[in-house]
Length: 182
Image 1: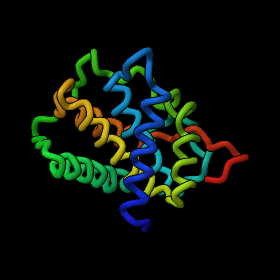
Image 2: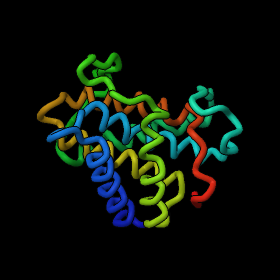
Image 3: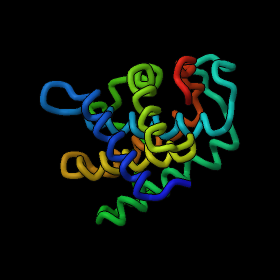
Image 4: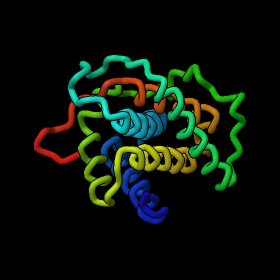
């Protein structure tokens, strides 16, 4: 596994990418930002399961015991990162029914259309595999939650992250561009 410094750098680049791509006028919709980072993490985790690209139609829900086992590890890392940065989140109080004003403004395939390839470029630049990409996405999610914690209750944004990890890791992603190495 790559060293922590490489992965932290990739997470910061991912966060910056997401902010730049999702920004409208002077701000970014926090729910969309957190959800997008989590979905990218989940999709990277999904790809680490070695399903054949394009074998399952994009957007299809894939029930997977492997995803059931692995996505909670992303959540654990997210919560540990938040705690290490002074934000305590009670897992039993996560808001899983997202208030309308924080609901993501893009669906998973729409989000992937504009962000999957730039995310993969960051992963390639740092020599990271899909499993490591999932961790990077979770860390980018943590950055977004930390930066927005005074605007949105972290129990809401962590709920969005959990939903994004689940959705990303259990939804067949759009195929990667065949001209790009993965």
